[in-house]
Amino acid sequence: MEHRAKTVLVVDDDAAIRRLEMAILTREGYAVFEAGDGADAIERLGRGDLDLLLLDLRMPMTDGWTVMETVAAMRRPPRVVIVTGWADAPPDHLRPFVDATLAKPFQPADLIKTCNRLRPVH
Image 1 (cartoon, rainbow, N blue to C red):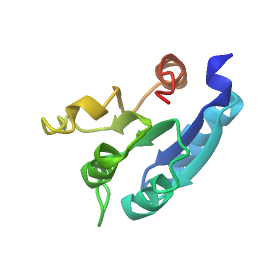
Image 2: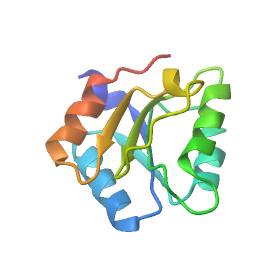
Image 3: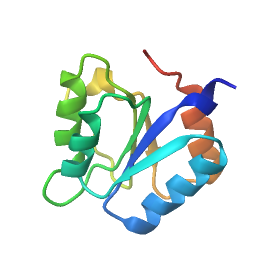
């Protein structure tokens, strides 16, 4: 199946949510990495080998929109799913880089369905 080859970075400052997302996607066959804050996410994005990014927006220090600025500057950006408990709309210049939004709290089936439908762009 197409989604089995996807490499995913889960970014959330809430460790419980991060672990939940990682467990769900690992069971689905994804190769999953984690970042507990935006700065770690930016460092990991620098390697350029990710297909999908699950991104929380409201994090201390480096927030999700700052991470999205890095995504927007990438030659081959990953697909992006914003996972948030807030109704934050992306700024106009970042909107083309947001492929989906998943509201917290989410159902595991909704996370799987959202991720499975996003094919890698490279």
